[in-house]
Image (cartoon, rainbow, N blue to C red; front, side, top):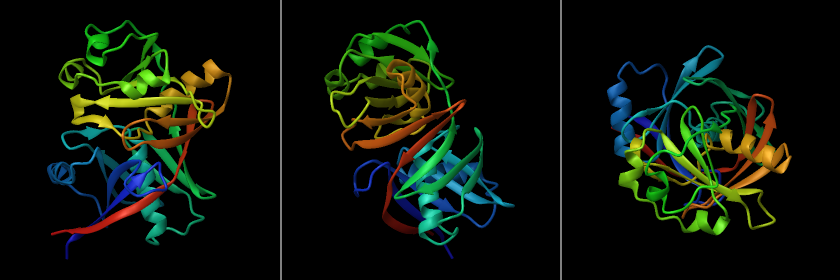
Length: 263
């Protein structure tokens, strides 16, 4: 019998919006990293999640089409959605994931899923050579997290209109680049886009892990602990965020769009 795989659009309640992730729930550990990487390459989504039981918890790993990823929000949200939707867990049960970034949890909060992730605040950092040229805009502020660069620009319109040079960005050493500004809509507190060509993702539609940095950055700027971010990629998506000390709560919806079987 083949291995079931489910494709979910995360951080949206509308099919074909948000960020698509594949979810593969297995009965036991996979000893073959190359197989997981090959599946992720075949799915050709920004991330594919692999899950298997570990006592009362679950092991969770994420792969982009070309590398393993240390932290991924939208594929974690997608994984939790599949666990509850397909009856692996009762809806009232918290999902607990063992990952390369420590223990992560997911639980249902009304119609949304809430993830508990580590905060990854950005520290001020010198502007990398070529970054402004690659993005095609001026930076107001630049910081560096464990994984990425955070670049503030002067308007939401600039964020929406960016047309980066992905070849140049891929040559700057970092997992990715989040570009952000205050929102020009009363519905949202800030807007962002996320580019990661160096790991095979030219533009990520909605990036949960980026909001682990965006939340503390905008929380300080806006003097808020509860905010809503709008990732203004072509697909678009909405991420609710809450600051909780050294943790960040990420909230969003998810919808299943495809089921298949790996043969």
